[in-house]
Image (cartoon, rainbow, N blue to C red; front, side, top):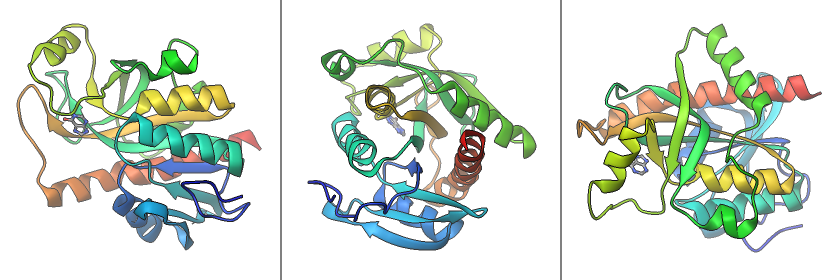
Amino acid sequence: MPTPHISAPDGAFAETVLMPGDPLRAAHIAERFFDDAEQVTNVRGMAGFTGTFDGEPISVMASGMGMPSAAIYVTELVREYGVKRIIRVGTCGAYAPSLALRTIVAATDVVTNSNMPALLGAPTPIAPTPALVEALHDAASARSIDVVTGTVFTSDIFYEPTDEARERHTAAGVLAVEMEAAAIYSVAALEGAEALAMFTITDHLVTHEHLSADERQLTVDEMLELGCHTAVAAQRAAT
Ligand code: HPA
C-alpha cells in the first residue's frame, strides 16, 4: 500500500533496492543501467524506479540527505513493500590521508555521532550484512575493481564547526565520512532486511581536493555499475 512518503502500488519494488542519496542520481541509475525502467514513485521528488539488470529485477530509490530521511525510506520499503536488501550507492569525504579521490569504499563498520541507532535499539556493532559484502567482493574481483573496506563515520553534521571530529576520526583509522549508512544498517537490521553501503570518494577532507561536477558523474558511474552487479549477485545467491 502507498505510504506517507512512497506512492508506488504493492509489488512495485524488486527485492533488491539500490539507494543513492540524490533523486537525480536515482533517475540516472535507472536510465543508464536498467533495462525497461519505470518510475514507481516521486513523492516530494524522491524518485524510485524498477527495471531489470542482467535479466534480474532491480529497483532504485533515493534516500535524501541525512539519517532521518534515509530511515523513513528504508522502513517503508522493507515494512510495506517487502524489500529484502538495500545497497546504498553514495559519495563520501575521505578522512584517511592515504585514500585517493575516486577510490571505492565499502563500510564494513560504522561509527556515528547520531543517537538514532541507540534510540531505535539497533544491534551493535553497526555493520553490513556479510552476504552483501561477499557479493560486492565477488562482483569487484570479477571486474578487477579495487574496493577498500573499513570503518566509515556517519555524521549528522556536514558543516563541522571545528576540525576536531575529523582529526579524531583520522587518528582512529576511520576511512571516510558520509551521512546515511548508520541509519540504513540500523533500520535494515531491525526490520529484518540486508544492507550494505558503498561509496566513491569525491572529496578529501585532509588534502582538501574535490572532484569537479563532470568528474563526479563519470567516476561515480563505475561504483554505481558495481552496485548493480553486487545487487544481482546477492539476489542470485539468495534464491
Ligand atoms: N561530508 C559528509 N558527507 C559527504 C561528504 C562530506 O564531506 N562528501 C560526500 N558526502
